[in-house]
Every structure is written in structure tokens, then in C-alpha cells.
Image 1 (cartoon, one colour):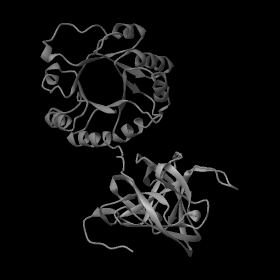
Image 2 (cartoon, helix red, strand yellow; image 1 turned 180 degrees about the vertical axis):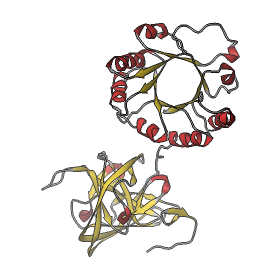
Image 3 (tube, helix red, strand yellow; image 1 turned 135 degrees about the horizontal axis):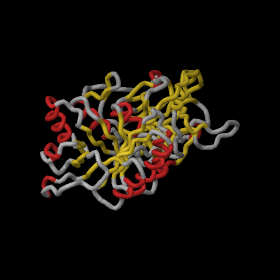
Image 4 (cartoon, helix red, strand yellow; image 1 turned 135 degrees about the vertical axis):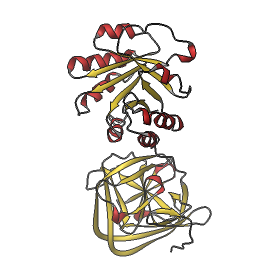
Length: 369
């Protein structure tokens, strides 16, 4: 689980208490300071990290209630690393500026409980190298970041990302924003089984193919529907097709008027999608993840409309391209060609409890047909 430490050494005294209160209330993982008196005021829910400028053993013994949870010491060479190895409270700080220090960071990440790395270069290639080197290590890797945008990037490097980030916050608002970033995971959805009522050829119209910047799994797609209250799980072009190669990044999603489910329970019309838009990729088991739209391609094609109902009778409708290679998913991830659907066939879908206004859920009366 990803986490963050706050480096409060540069926080102005006038802002310090607000920043610390924000860290506590938003459950930030740790606070780094060079003042043991300040760290002693923090509750045990926060990892108290004392930064010291020497790599030798910490001089003197603090009372148990005042001792920091970890000592963050510089690691400039292999001798420094050897002195820290085996200490379960040790955190090493490595300043990566060249090949030697990169190799030192890789070694530290393999043996220390915490390794904090400050990369001099903006490229994330050195971080990728450390992540690969520490793949099987039990310690936690923490990357120094300059702001929230870099933190988001660091968490996605090599899909796994850095375990944590170290940020020097400007104020309490930045602490709360960092906390929101840490919890920006997509929740699972409870999918429903839908029963097909009819499949009708409706003639020419405009449909949208959504090309994403990610590969879909064989049982993944996106949720699309004509009504804001019900969606069908449309399959990606991951499975083999006659006469054309697979395109595992694409979903032939439906007519341009259709709703597509995105992040935070928001919807967009397919016609609104642009390069850089975000959507939910949804698996047949309800798992979700964020995907980025590379492009949306609108073309005129013959269309067909599928109508179905849920167990409670709620109607669901989807209009898609009238072609055999367009597919939807059924229970268990079964792949179904839309032109071969029969009355009584089962589809996977999602039932929303809210109506929509400009894509946002709203509790008002609305009847769609």
C-alpha cells in the first residue's frame, strides 16, 4: 500500500502546527524532522523519522516515549550502508547523481527497512532501475518528490511505483491534497446479470470506438448504456477476429449519444471523449482501474439496439455497431457477438441508482425510454 512522509524541516514556524494537524487528521504515514522535540509531540499513528546528518550510530539514548521510530541517515558509500544494515530502525538517504550512487541506492533498497532516494535527474529511468533491483526486497522504497504532480507519476512507474514519497509541503492544503492522491484508487463495482429482451436493427448512425493507452485483459471492457441508470459491459477487441488483427487497447463502444462510466461515479457521453479523457476499465468480476483515452474515433455505421432487463425489471438499453465483431461480455466473462444475441441471453451490466445531470449523479425524477 502506497504511503507518504512529510519533510517538515523547511515548513515555516507559523505553518508548522497546521501542517502537523493535517498530517495527523489525513493519516499521512510519517513525518521527517531534525528536531526530536517536535517529533515527540506526534501520536503513535504517525511514523516519527529523525533526520540526522551523520551516518554513525546515534549518540545517546532517548527515553522510550521520546525515541523516534526511525533514524534517517545519509548513505554516501558502502561503509555507510554496512553500518546501517541489520538495524530495524534504520532509514538510509541516498542522493543519486551518477552511476555509482545509483548502484548504491539499489544495494540500500535491497537491505534496509527504508530507503529514501533523491534523484537529481528528472528522468524516471533511475527509479525504474532501483525498483527492478528491489523487486524481492522486504524494505520500503521512498522517492523524494517536488510536488503532487511528480508524486502521481512516481506512484505509476513500472506499474508498481515507489512504495512511498517524501514531500516538503508548502502548507496544510498540500498535505490534504497529497492524502487524496494516496487514496485515489478505483473501487470494485457490483455487476448485475441482464436478460436480453430484443435485438433490433435500426439503420445508419454514428458510433464511437474508444482507443485507450492501456491493454485490456480478456475479461475487461467499459460500461456503456443509452440510459444513465443502466450499463452493459462492452468487450475490448482483445479476442481474435477474422480478417483483422486484434486491437487490445480498443472498445467498439456504441452510438455517440451513449453514456460511458468513468471515475468517481461520473459519466460522459461517448461523443465527449477526447485524447486525455479518463475512463474505468471494468472486469467481469467487478474490479476496476483507471485508463486514459488515446483517441475517440467516430464513424457512420449500421446500428442495432439491444434492450434488456435486470432481475428487478429495470430496463437497460445499448445501441452499438451492427456487426458480428462487436462484442459484449456475459457472466463469467463469456464473449458474446452482438449480432448473434437471442432473447433470453444473459449479459453483464451495472445498475446505477442515480439519475444524471451533466454527468453527475443527482437525486431527481427522470424517466428514460
